[in-house]
Figure 1: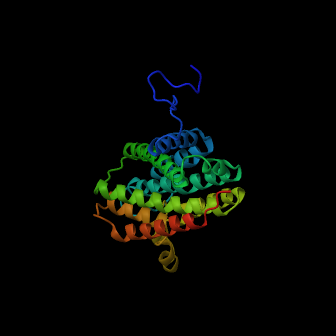
Figure 2: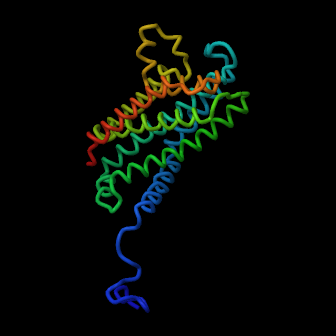
Length: 264
């Protein structure tokens, strides 16, 4: 039977296999699986998203370099490193990867495929979430081995991580969709380093001058690390103030990315 002949018993004018796009859910799953494999095969991305947070956690938990206040250092550092993992994947890694995909015309070609553009963004977000699950599992295991004893409600932790992912994804996509790839590479890494130092991740915000604290506490990484620390270290309930800051950044970032993102 040739490619244009009907299958036995099929109605006249039909073809096997049936032409047309696959169901939308299947297209998104396939693209998400591809994005995840590409992310996990990228050595530089793995260094940024997995190795660096793990090394920081082990180093500053075992060597008395930073004054993290009362209690064990790992109890302060573990929530901050979890926030750093979200920052590195949802913002830095996604911004750099998407920026170079835009430069090389990958996004332009994918935008012409049956997969809608919002479906492509959904697939990228799913890949980020899968990577974050692996990061959180690894960092939690390492922190527990170092003596970490987390407290609090897991639901609060999940809400903080999801809103943090949304906020950083919006900002990363905004950067990737408006700047040149080389500028995105430089800016994303610079922001990562600045937030690592000034976002309350490994250095308590209380160590900064009062005027600086007033500004730094409203950064998304500060809200995420402080919220996680309140729950996991101090056993607090739902950190509404930190959730509100993350929600505001998520709305602003995703809204701006949707409005200003250029596909080519």
